[in-house]
Length: 118
Ligand code: SF4
Image (cartoon, rainbow, N blue to C red; front, side, top):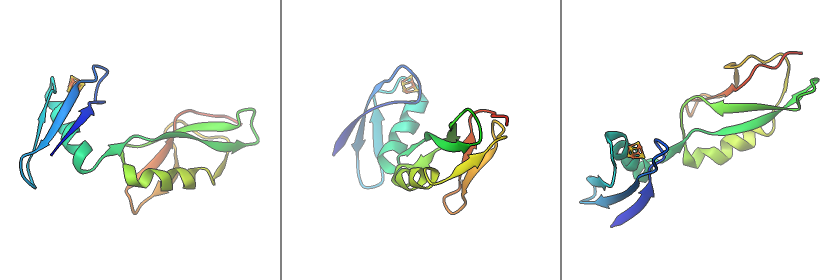
């Protein structure tokens, strides 16, 4: 079995091919650097993404605060993460890098991407 992928680890976007040699061994080809092999294996075994979104802010001229996850999140947890993010409403001030939501069971933190003063 094989799967075609595009590496998203850098802007070059190498076309990768993942081939299952047996149940435990996956061969990655098409990568121009070691990061592509790492990305390709993770993508077919346990795909993850950095998630960016916005959350509601009250009492400021800025109504949405841009946020992003600290590190990557398993793809099958992204919908749950976004559903939880869209239910919260924050009050300024919020500092860039401040934790705005925590999902400790998944080891995921969501951080503010900017500072918003009152
Ligand atoms: S394989 Fe390496 S060079 Fe190619 S897109 Fe991935 S990170 Fe970039």
